[in-house]
Length: 244
Image 1 (cartoon, one colour):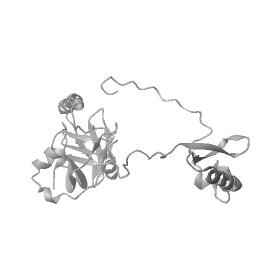
Image 2 (image 1 turned 90 degrees about the horizontal axis):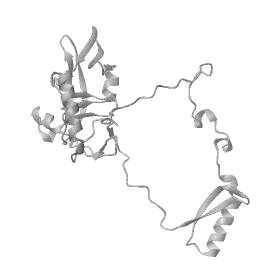
Image 3 (image 1 turned 30 degrees about the vertical axis):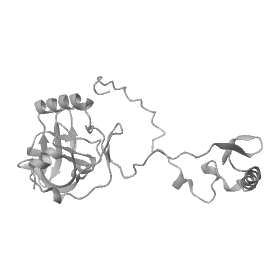
Image 4 (image 1 turned 180 degrees about the vertical axis):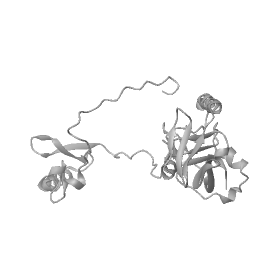
């Protein structure tokens, strides 16, 4: 069991999709490295930075201070990068705890068996961490502290055609509906391919309305809004240059 919230420098980040434990804090817990479970998918930051975790570890964590505390099971990804924080608590765990976070008051509240538990931050430590994070942004191998995601679909850039393509209209006189064929095809093969595609143009669809026997309730996304209420424009938010 780790009393994580009795430690300082814990970041509550609702933009993070994972819980992160930094290597320097992991070493202080004196847990053997061989207890880490392998993790093959990388972490991707808000600006596209990619970091590969050392592994994952399941820890029983005490959140808050007695008597307004709770004990939860968390799975942390251990990351070996410089950071002013010891750990990051992300959105999934906050949702499971049903936690409400106030950044203004540096306070997090959550339901417990008898009442409401809370975990309070330290204003001075928070400012020190923010200052350190700003100063470290120009250094190498620093994982940004905002909007971290565990990405299993990270792939190289989408492959491009090995040859130039020629756009051919599906119907004569309609330049909006076109398909592409390779420019290096022989004239006979190209002509046969174009004729085949044009003869089977009824198999191509260009809008949801052209797909028969499929309910639009399944294939069309709609916003659940009240048509009786006028739209509301949110006030523009201006950030200081450091946050931008």
